[in-house]
Amino acid sequence: MNVKRSKTNKNNRTKTDDMAEGLVVSHLGKSLAVETADGDVVLCHTRRRLGLMTVGDRVLWEPTEGNLGLIVKLLPRVSLLSRPSGNSKSRPVAANLDQVLVVFSARPRCDLLLVDQYLVNCENHSIKALLVYNKIDLDIKDQQLEFALDLYHRIGYEVLPISAKSKFGLGQFKRTLKNRTSMLAGQSGVGKSSLTNAVLPDKNLKTGTLSHSSHHGKHTTTTAKLYNLPDGGRLIDSPGVSVFGLSNISAADLAYGYREFQDYIPHCKFNDCRHLDDKGCAVVAAIDHGKIEISRYDRFRKLRSKLVTNAG
Image (cartoon, rainbow, N blue to C red; front, side):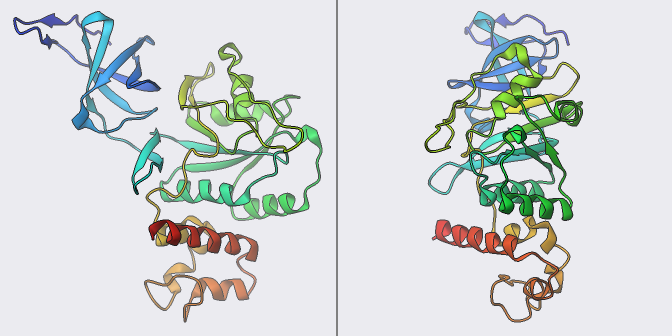
C-alpha cells in the first residue's frame, strides 16, 4: 500500500492526501505500534474520541511529522476480548482473534476455574478455544487433571499435549496456528512465552522462572504483543493470569459459556432461571440424570457467586 507523504498547511496542521490501513501490534506507553501493509512498524498516536484500541485492531492511519503517525479510524472488529479494569469498567485485550489456545500444565497446578473462565469468554464471543497441555515431559500424574481433560474432550474441546522443552507435539502446534490469528492464555508459569519462543525463536522472549518451593510462576509478560508467524498467521503473546476475567459477562452469559448446558437452557421452566435451586431447571435435571458432570457444574456455581459478588 502506497502512503503519500504528509503536507503541512499554514496553520502547521498535518494534511494527508491518503490514509493507509494498518494493524496494531503492541502498546508503547500511550502510543500504539502499527504495522503497515509493507511490514514496517510506525509509532502512532490516536484521537481520544476513537476510544481504547488493542493488539489485533485494524485501523486507518495517516503520517505526521517526525516519521510518526496518527490513527484516524478504528475499523470494524470481528471479535474482542476484554479484561476488568476497576470501577466496573473493562479494557480491551485483543481484537479480531480466530482462536484462543488455553495453556496449562501440571506444574504449576492447573487452575480449572481459570480454564473455565477462558472457555466461557470464548463461547460468548464465538472464538474457537483449544486446550494446550504443556510440560508433559514432567510426567506428573494428576488424577483430577486427567479427569478434567477427558471431560473437556468429551464436550468437544480439542486438547493438544505438548512439551516446549522436548519439542513433542510442536509440529501439530504449528499447524494449529497456521493462517490464523491466535492468542495464548493461561496462568503464569505454564510456558506461554516458551511456546512462543519455540515458534518464533528469533524473538527470544524473556521466559519466566518457576519457584521450586511454591511452584508459582513469575510474571514476565506485561503487555500483549502480536507477532507474524513464518509459516503464516499471527500470534498474540499476552500477560498471565489477569488477561481477561468475567468482564462484560452476565449470569446468563456464564451459563451459556458452559457449552454442555446449552441444549438444556431453553427447556428451563423460567426464562430467568439461575440454574441453582430454581423450580423446573433443565440444567439441574440433566445433572441429576448424569448428563452433565457435577465437577463442571460446581465450578459454574463458584463463578456465578463471583459474578454476583462483583456486581454487588
